[in-house]
Image (cartoon, rainbow over all chains, first blue to last red; front, top):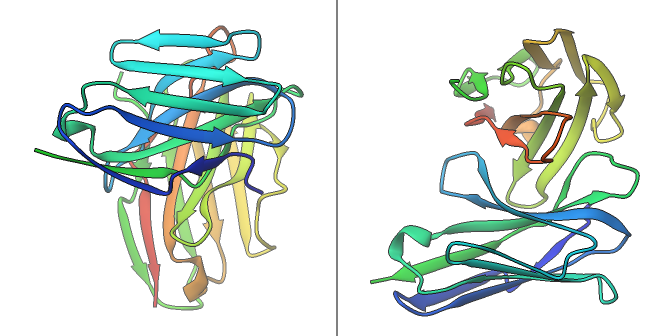
Length: 111
Length: 114
């Protein structure tokens, strides 16, 4: 069953603009992770945020986590055409079981 | 390290045939996961192993699906008999149990059942 739900399902922006994707989940978590998938490829890990963290940065990526609202956001700043991909959030439950993925946000960045 | 290796990359078969997908995890990783991805259902966890032992197979759709991990460097996912609705991309991922919880994905096997 799906744990995370990303919003929006699809996002189209111009190069240089910021892209924000949101994720909501249902149960208590150990951590939340974001992955990227380029067309026809496997998923690649981007960033992990633990349940006791509220914000994390990695390069042009900024992730926030609000455990009271059971939601997270991924911000990509100064987007590039190469950022075009699908982005998935995944949650690891407090029981420490396998990751559960959402259905993803498809991001298109045009130059 | 070559990363997670999956074979074959593409498989086209006819309904009723047996299909075997293979995965070699990253050396030293303790956990291995099989996922299925379709447009309709997204990325679904089928089964995962920890130290070669199946921990959760609740995602395996039905008895036609089976998975094995005979040793730390090899796993198979078998579908017998295959059906058109099994058409999907199947991913294998592995993870180390120590430290960071990142999963490393293979390139996937695109299965088409005619």
